[in-house]
Image (cartoon, rainbow, N blue to C red; front, side, top):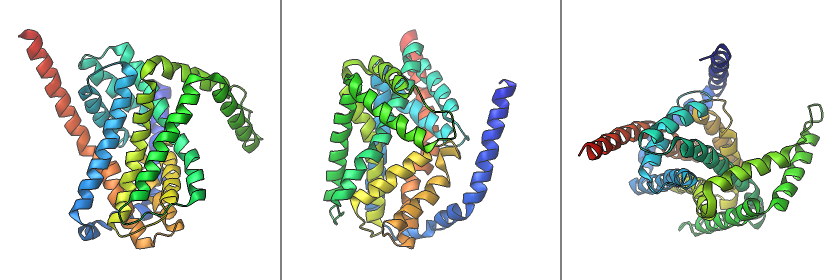
Amino acid sequence: MTRGGMLRRLLAVAIAGVALYGLAPRLVEVLGDLPRLRDIEPAWFAVMALSESASCVCMATVQRIATGEHRLGPFLHSYLSGNAVSELVPGGAATSAALQFEMLSEEGVSPARAASGITAASVLVFGTLLLLNILGLPLLVLGVAVPAKLRAATWVSAVLLLGILVFGALALRGDRFLITVGRAAERIVNKLRRRSQPLQDLPKRLLDQRSAVVKAVGSHWWQALLAAGGKWVFDYLTLVFALAAVGARPDAALVLVAYSAVSLLGQLPITPGGLGVVEAGLTGALALIGVNGGDAVLATLAYRIFNYWLYLPAGLVGLILHRRAIRAQHAEASG
């Protein structure tokens, strides 16, 4: 590692340490609710596990499509292990990508395709998160309550996936829409950052990133869009199920707005995996939309068990499966 790289890594660790120190009271409050998990019906844990597993499969599917591969296994193995690393190391996105690249190459994925696919999938998935923040606003105006059978949450999820598909199609298949969005975003950012150097090339950068994504996913763009949207929608449903499990029934659109905003905040490389940042942001956001303090803390804990903590041992599982796949390939080649 170069001296500059070492300094950047040390700076990231220092920032994470300071942030975790400041967020420690809220993190301790959330983790201190562990004994209360016994009050949740076991069936809810199964539902949350299924929803979060679907989110994980969707992420691996985006990467599979972006690399032009047909096998899903290598991408599940590498994503589980890479994600675990990113949630342990401050600013671990680069380390995670490098590990995924190495694991995919070892399982027979073309290095060139692996590199371009991981990059394109990251752009696509982050873009759908931005769309969630936009699409949540009309739903917020409509006001959708979550009844006991969670029908409204299902409806919201279907609308989100449809909206992502429509907006994504406009962005991926036409320059005019993306240029218009880029110029509007550029004007807004420049007004908010009047004392900083103004942005001048955002539409071009968006077009360049779009071209890279289109080149990677090809004619399978709509499947990639649905999988990228599914990564966030199923994760959102995990939070909805966590709220239902503790007996809270807030407005589904408000939950979406809180979820998408906190998820976007969690993408900032402040702490590993947004640890502390997500807990503090989500408990506060849930309280703002009418969930009482105790339920907000318990629901956040239940959600983060599946959204964060279980991904750590899952990374080890992914590594074990990866090693088994390599041994099977070697045995097949020698046989």
